[in-house]
Image 1 (cartoon, rainbow, N blue to C red):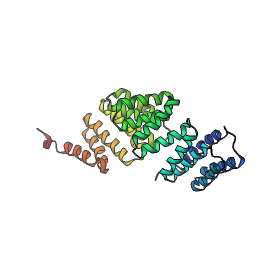
Image 2: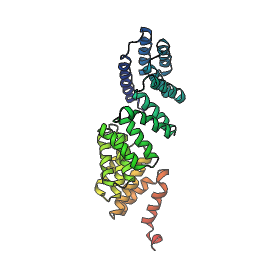
Image 3: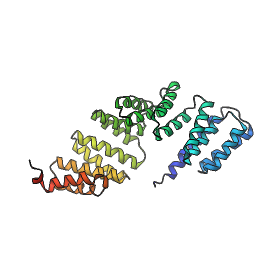
Image 4: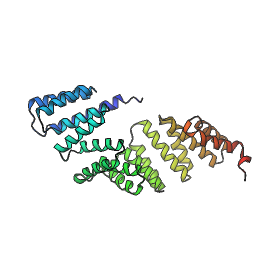
Length: 293
């Protein structure tokens, strides 16, 4: 299990801070406000069940408290109680029809559950009052990419990165989308943006891999070699590393450096996902007569 405790803590701290500011927009009863603030502090400490109890007290003392319902949903999601989380996000939205953060959280949950049409409707609801929302446009773009509607995916992902020029995740899916549309130069450019704006090394590695694949496709072997080597250094995924080694094998094979290609294919063959294609390439190099027609 990847250890993101420090990053998770920072995300929660930002989340609860912004939620606290939202809560201050309306005057709350002292009891509701105290319970809510206690819940925020518990959520920061990842004591989600205890935090929920405080948020329940807050909504009991104030029946018009969307931020408390949102934070309850957040805590339920962290506890993997997804139905309860959705219920609370919907309650937050019913109390505040422009509560963008709650819509996005609900849309992401629906997308994770494979309820694509409901997720699309949820993200579209955000665009009805904020058509430049980076997260809503990204959510729609990702859903359309997964549905193989690449032209629609490109439309929303371009809006996402226009609204948030350092949105690495959006650049990543945009790169994949443009690759499917055979817009290879634009795809490479999107992956470069993803790498430039991503802080996590392992994700940089994943993006380098995807960029390297496209660079092999357009026969830019020197750039592909550099990107794929970065992928093997940075990515934590054994499958991504093996894929990068496989495509490094392709780079050297296409350059006529067969012995070097073998080294990388052999590395790739150690991974179950890449074993079959790598072993095929190895056999072609070692036994060329078998494949002479």
